[in-house]
Amino acid sequence: MSVDVRARTTAAVEKQWIAYAVVYLGTALWFWHSGLVPGDSMSRAANAYYTLFSRDPHLAAIGFVWNPLPSLILLPFLPLRGIVPALTQQGLLVVLMSAALMTATVAVLHDVLRRIEVPRTARLVLTGAFALHPMIVVYSGNGMSEACFLLCLMLAVRSLLIWISEGRAETLVPAGLAVGLAYGARYEALAPVAAVPVLVFLTTFRRTPGPRSRRLALARVDAVITALPGVLAVALWALAGKLIVGQWFATFSSRYGNAAQVSANAGDISLVTGDDLATRAGYGLQQMLGLSPMFAVLLAAALVLAWHRRDPRVLAAVTVLGSVLAFDVLAFLSGTSFGWLRFHITVIPLTVLLAGHVITAVRPPVAAAARTGTAVAALALTLVAIPSTLITLNRPDLAREESEWLTADGAARTRDLTRVNRQVAADLDALNLPEGAVLTDAAYAFRIVLASDRPKQFVITPDRDFPAALADPTGNGVRYLLLSARGAADAVRIGRFGPDPATVPTGGARTWSDTAGNLQWTLVPL
Image (cartoon, rainbow, N blue to C red; front, top):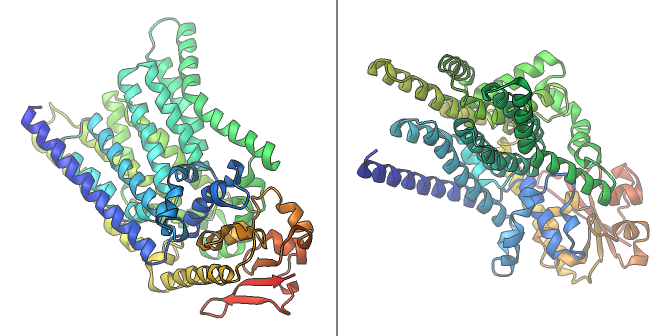
């Protein structure tokens, strides 16, 4: 490539990234300004917040139900709340962070396409097909863990691709680290933690010359190098959870975890997704095809062409991203998942990379017309995902979470809950209570704690003296109990009044309801 062409390519890429960064920033500001920042995003921000600004600041307050990386990356920026309170009170920080992380993900994906030698024009189009995919745009600005997770996965794909291409063992280290970081973002990374070392073992064994014993030895070494960061991430996080909260994997065993939530909502889930394997499979297939209608076609074409050319590079993306996709599909089919649309999000970058491999695989001596036709077809099969996803996002049955932000009725409900939580915080602040005067379960009250100007007035579940305060509230200076009417596992309500919300005393209590009249919060004086 000449200097002039290289310069023009670099300039075009830089303009793309700036444009995508602006789009993602605009999306983030829209979520924030509209009061639509999801609860999952605010809870990750709250977990980070507790470690520095709660009544009992300590690192373990970050919690062990959900993976810590989305919260940890917020820590250096939390002190800026003193200058811009909206960063934490209204979730501005977390949505800005997801915009930055998704922009970085786009840059890594473009570099992967460059490394597999996709021509410039096709590369820019494919990068745009990922960056402007409606699902990617939504999750670039809503502050949830998808942007962080996708960035880690794409870094793993990039490193694994470099290793497959160059064969240098030291390039396995960043691949393993990226997979380990991905586990820090989401539990689905258990799949590449297991799958990537297998691919590395088989690849090294296949292409290493010499006797079988030498090939096995080198394959084991490479697999261990790759597996170690991920295995350590899993083991150390589990050990920390056991030592601090007494649970190896709190997301599966805690009453706040995913398993408990799915079990509690099983009836509602089955009403939408079906309660038998065939119906669930059909529902999940609709979601996946909605995000990428031509995924199966591109997967088959990429694998066939890779086999024909003896080019294993496509396995980097298939192993990392495909294993996560398979994990989520199996979890849903087994009844241990909510079946959210976002659980299929890895099909989007995987489809784009498969299209890149298809375009790259068709080279001379194939005629120029055939190469052009293949590229156009691959791009068309990828770009069709954009209108398809727009249709899917407008179907509340398939996009159950997204409809709470993107449809008029859903957005109204979300804004209303945001308003209620902020009102509760403002009303409590107006009481000018001392530290530790309000006992509440942070698993449900995190929005209120974040919105409050007086966060130390709360005794929350991450506080080390929470069990003592729950056992003897008045003896520990508690004046009020703040109870969630919707939280099935509210520790304060259950600990003081039992699991039935009807047993909560109403005499002298203050309540807050949404505009539909549904009770949300009860403040019980002691």
